[in-house]
Length: 114
Image 1 (cartoon, rainbow, N blue to C red):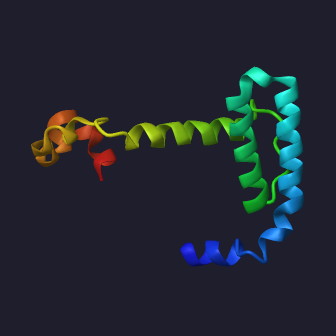
Image 2: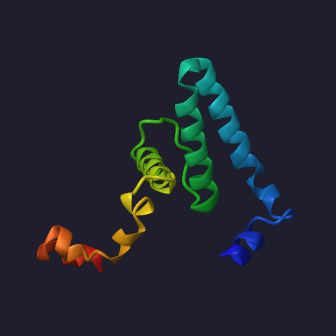
């Protein structure tokens, strides 16, 4: 993964993304002028749009209400919450790692444990 990212985003090859970055910068500034109080949503839309346009060649996303932006932001929020220290009880009680899922949830949830 690192090698592929290094080859695709080396100093000499990054210049081909300048046009897409300029387009996204113009859209971001435009959003700031229209909706300055929603700066957080503007940044989230711009980040999702620039990554999708560079990596997958998608057209720029112009609205933060786009379904793709919502999915990306929801996933990011879930990952961030899961990575916070103290989110799960097992961090406080390490012995809980040895409790089987079936004893807690029953047989029908065994599928999700594997």
